[in-house]
Length: 599
Ligand SMILES: O=C([O-])CC(=O)C(=O)O
Ligand SMILES: [Mg+2]
Image (cartoon, rainbow, N blue to C red):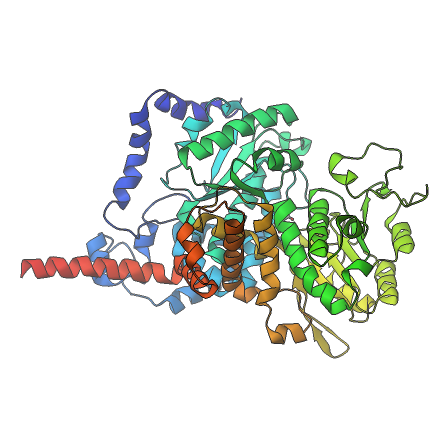
């Protein structure tokens, strides 16, 4: 009920009145009618880019911003120094997060210049792990609108409310209901943080223009009682809607999004039960689920290298998965596909996996009703024996690969890590839960207890670690290596679906970006500092797979060589370093023309 007032105005404005929609948009269109480079903030249009202190005096005069900013024309280096100085003065990560959010709001191009330049330092503040805390405290730290909130009460009116989004073009949205944010549980509308954070990476990593991204949070109630009782909580107080109600709401939402933006790519993120929507919409929409598919692809990308470096053939690998939720099963299925590419039958590939959930090893005769998604991997060869704890399973399987998707921080104990090292020359250890506090072990622990022999990747970032006079570098198997490129590739070739082939290809692209030097260091992922190039390569692979699956619509791309296509992809990427320069030169041209015509 709390949201009804807020939504009544747009409903009244739009009901049966096409003209009203263009009226609401008109002011923004007018702002932008003369110049191309006036898209100002990421999600709310204003003219902030016109206040960039690097713009020259003639340009300021033309834009009528002269006198509204301090007189000096600054270089980017000076702007950067000031911003990083201000950032350094913030003492907590959440303050840094807020500073960066405000910067994005006020000067989007400057924000993305900094993010792309200082990616390793800033990504953890914009995204995992800080974004987790931001989501937990969303209603406490809220400062500005940066996305759309659609409520269950809006059902029946979604199409008209979506007209309120001020940008005329949207190419991609990240949608969450906040019901399972990272490993932090149901955070209700606080999930908006993750939609914004992921889209910031779509822009930062894959160069999708900020103004064509739409962070979307649907308020379908929350099962989090603490939130519902928190006076500051900004969502509805209702309990979570039923699965049937959610389905009806989503049917309407998907239709409404496609109606306004027919080519939109829709990424589902952090839904407690993500399988039904993926199955329901994957044929009719260009959509994917990042937690099942993005995580699956990125881990497969790391596993390809890890399996090679381990010296153990795919058919001899034994993988224990601690955590059998959507991400766990998604990752396992993706690796099954990789093993099949390596020549195993599906049955052989599947038999390399032992999934563990809160009740122990997932077996068919365990006596409980297994969730649908676990059945595929349930073991039948346990001879009636049941294994209730991770320790028991580990002892029974003697795995070569240990995957953590449990959201239980510290679950990979020193004993478990030591055993992995005793059984394997190069144990593969991937604690993937996010944020860092939920990681099944730290990098330091993995190195210490395996005597530096672990082939390691985590979901959230860890620092390099010195052990016995040697420096070790952690891999970060975070889906940020693939989802930006999946989105970019899908958008650029105008794919009508995101097929499994496209997802597989995104993971396959990753090892192709590892340099010789990185191989020597046993790194499983390319350096994060090359993330823009990595995203372009992922997009190339995704487009090729879309072509193979016949879901692409820009057919002339099929004729291009890989080199030409990759260069074309890069030329299409938003480059924040170009933006103010282009605005500057565009205005200068107009000014020069005006002067010339007066002569
Ligand atoms: O957001 C991340 O860092 C990875 C992810 O999708 C999750 O943990 O749900
Ligand atoms: Mg997620």
